[in-house]
Image (tube, rainbow, N blue to C red):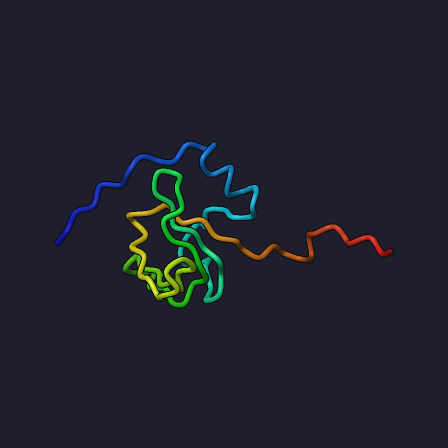
Length: 99
């Protein structure tokens, strides 16, 4: 069995770039649904990005359709920092102004 030592946490400035674009760190894999757009980061750089196709929370695995390679990729979440574009609760959003 492989033992993984988690890497250092990303500085908040590295995550701030992704927050501006609407991506945040999910609290857990179960917060993600198929179709959710995610980015897998290593040292603040995007290594893989695309919509989720499948999740195995128990094993810490995430499958995505990678936008760059146009193939399905398996992401071992202990090797990356995962950020996702999670849907906002529309009930808490301000109403849009009517023209």
